[in-house]
Image 1 (cartoon, helix red, strand yellow):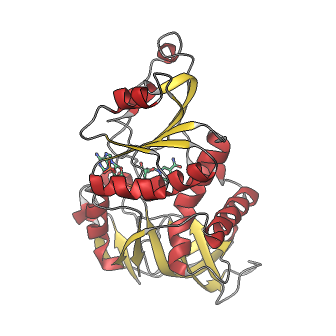
Image 2 (image 1 turned 90 degrees about the vertical axis):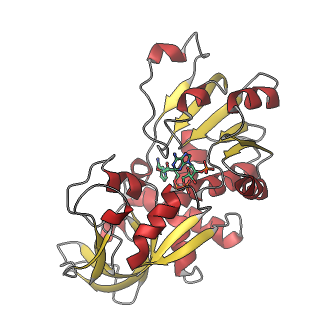
Length: 323
Ligand code: NDP
């Protein structure tokens, strides 16, 4: 099969398009022929070695496709079934051997591209707004990088739950998209000081929650945007890893803040939560409550270009590879 392989950490040029053996099934696995593969920022961290992976590896952990075969004894999946998955490593490829326990049956009316666009980012938004900080009507929320893949879905969903949204983005074009997704106020954080803007927009009270996946460049200042007893949600590191925090600084200095660093995989660890979250996200997509914006589709061979675009802040919404 054709696949992308990383044999050495580094830039996008390390994503090599190669001929590799089609994976052999182990007990409990299903062979899936991939039709659409989700590109996520975490694959940049893996490629760079910021989150180390054993070398060599096939990047990617999200995809949809059709069941080709199943290992002896696997029940519930047969050739031709449409399935999706997140959190199974090695999806930048034509085929993947995925544990049956991690496969999500796809609804008939949901097309492959929309499913691949909605799963990982949609389930991330689901746990961020329902579990990490359950958003209530009237909350004020700060969302960084609001025109990104997760950012647009998070903005739409927080708006639907009744929040007032202050969004940050780097350009006017992204500001327009954030507003269309539901942002009430948009700050160009590359040009304006977002702390003083947030203070101005909240009459010096601060926001109830900050959703920050930019990390290094925003983290410290994000904490200065919170109201007393507000919730700091650090869920990514697009600009680099956030600096260390002195826990004492969350107290008198900052007003008894809560700080958490959540990951999707701990919120879909068992089959029940995986299927429940996926089904709620698919319902949101089906009803039109959640609208994924597909920034672009790329040939599998062009994975390096997809990484360049994502890393270069040139994208808005979801990137897909088509094997
Ligand atoms: P995005 O489409 O949001 O792309 C990243 C965005 O971050 C850019 O478009 C850019 O927006 C902003 N950004 C700010 N500084 C930088 C920088 N120095 N380099 C690159 N981008 C920068 O990507 P995703 O939607 O795939 O992921 C968003 C974030 O969410 C990532 O950090 C990812 O790791 C995290 N994530 C976390 C999960 C979890 O469970 N914890 C699950 C899924 C994603 P702008 O130009 O407007 O600044």
